[in-house]
Image (cartoon, rainbow, N blue to C red; front, side):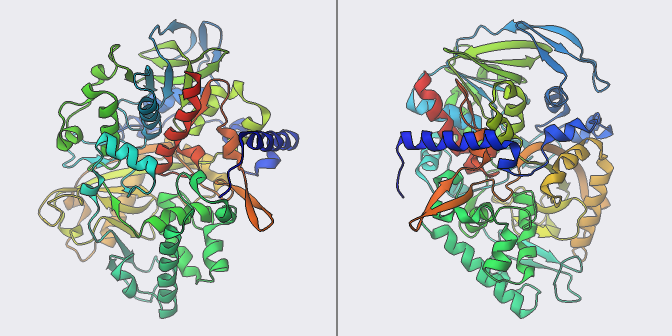
Length: 616
């Protein structure tokens, strides 16, 4: 792959920026951005679900996202030293409040203590030891999408979002894993990894089918209950995806690390690739839609072939899962940044002991992590940058030499839109975020699922696509008498244009509706396994990750490449312009790295650290 000079990159960037400014939002697509949606919609207040104790666990609680809604609803007016909150029926906050000075000594402020933000702090510290870093996050504990629920009566540490990761495949992953003690080899998921339930809700299935297929991505693929021609196409598709994973420069996370010659996959849907490029039966596309509606938040007819191939190619090679999902990885990074954050030194102690929030925000630390601090504005000047955050009922302003926004793109967009050029503003309108609902369902006995492996998919649910057995990667997984937890993930089938409405539904759909779907699903797919939901389920908890997943629609990773003399020339997509550094503020997070992947989040830390280090 040829490497352009810095001057070449600047000239090309400025040219395309000029085109975007001239053409407006039409130059970057035709999505239905939240900004325009808000112009014709009155957002509802949180419904009864917002006060249900079964939804008030984990991370993205109403106390967090309701403050974010101040920005979404345009309720904040910023003055030099105060903030005016306009009234709303959704809460009692209103009137003018002062912005107090946070007089801490910081060189870098990071917004978000999830994988992107903590990785940025890691790479900055690795390259410049002793850098004074403040990480601000609105939630109760670090994690973001890498969070967990371990509170009683849940019998196992259970994920509230991301569940697993792929084996490291790049030096930047090896570096952070090896340095922080992420012993991924000890947590490789044993087979069977995937099992699928087929019945009358499954398109193209053999008539009369109602059964589980175990190890569906492995040996079970030979016996999936489809006609022979479809089975053969599924086998061919599996081999094709395995081959993609092994190709040098093939689609990867973060996407920028790939070879431009494969960028042609970005503007097409995965369905088009499967059915038109590869000429597989439509059943193959439907089969992989079960995976896509969970992992990518959309159907194969709606998500980019580039991102789909990147994700699915890795599914046929070793993957690992800590107890509680990727929260185990994040805990090791936090412990490395702040040794007093978690007591103990062994892997088990780091995974099981609670965070010491006071120690994490000790003024003597080089890196400080402050939870319960929701950032609502960013500003940049010639020699410094600052943020305004809301904590314990007060607004504060913190200043540093540089700021990194490392959360979801909507946070950066609403907190910094006053700084954006027309092209950057238009690019942020192209970020599509889909809702993510997660449920943890505790079973009194693992017997009905003990043979299904780690991840089980099925068709025909109102809300859900699959469930992960929370303690599958552990010594007791074969014990049918143990209590266990099933972590369910939502199956989003709405179009990109419908995502704003889908996110609003999270505020108004009652708990009982989700629970009824779980009851119907489990009683159906576990029928004949001596299972009864009312008898065998002890607890159900929901986690509304309504603002957490970027929807990798066609054209989001890259625009269509330009061919010049047989060589593919990469053409940036809107995410490049959305994440461009503004003064001393950088923009990270997995959203602008192109995919909802743990590796994209870590890669965001690599990129943003390289942007701010020259400013220190």
